Structure formats: structure tokens, C-alpha cells
Length: 126
Image 1 (tube, rainbow, N blue to C red):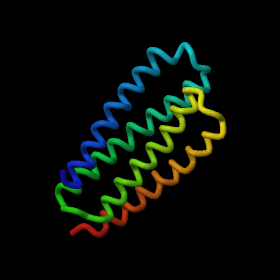
Image 2: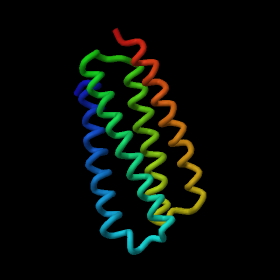
Image 3: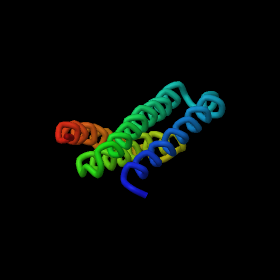
Image 4: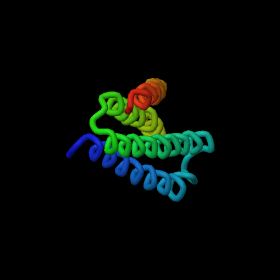
């Protein structure tokens, strides 16, 4: 599997998971969670959706332009960021200790860094 296939495959799985988690939240968790918890959960789902779509776009660019190290780095940072940001929100919703919330800002930083690295990568494309 080449880099673009890997990136697009991860994006596809992440989009499927975001869809499932969004539906699960709406149908099973909305009546169980507080309004604040549900809003936080929805934020995780929303961020996962948007960044997964971005990851998919990076995969398309990788396919068109070959193995750009900058695009690969951006993709990796987005995956790490989604896992840390959305993952920590999902974990908190499931009952993880409050200190686990400190992981979310690290995920946010990773997402921001991924998009900045993507900017550099796009500028270096032919």
C-alpha cells in the first residue's frame, strides 16, 4: 500500500467512525449525558469529520504528486491530532478521569501543526 492509499484508507475509516459515533451520540447518549457533555461529544465528532475530510484531500494530493514528505508529515499530524483531541473527548464522555482532558489541547496543537505543515507542503508542490 502506498502513502496516498494509506492516507485515504485512514480517512475513510475515520469518516465511517465519525458517522457511527455521531449517530450513537444522537440516539443513545443524548438522553444520558448532560447538555454540556453532549455538546463536548458533538464537538469531538465535528472535529473528527472535518479533519478526516482534510486528510482525504491530502491523500488525493499525495496520489497526484507522489510521495511528498511534507504531505506525509501533515497527514500523520492530523491523525495524531484527531486521536488525541476527539479521542480524549470521547474518553471523558465515557467516564475517563478529568485529568484526561489535558490531552485535548495536545491534539489541538497537533491539528494546527498538521495544517501548517500542509501549507508548507502545498507551497513546495510543482
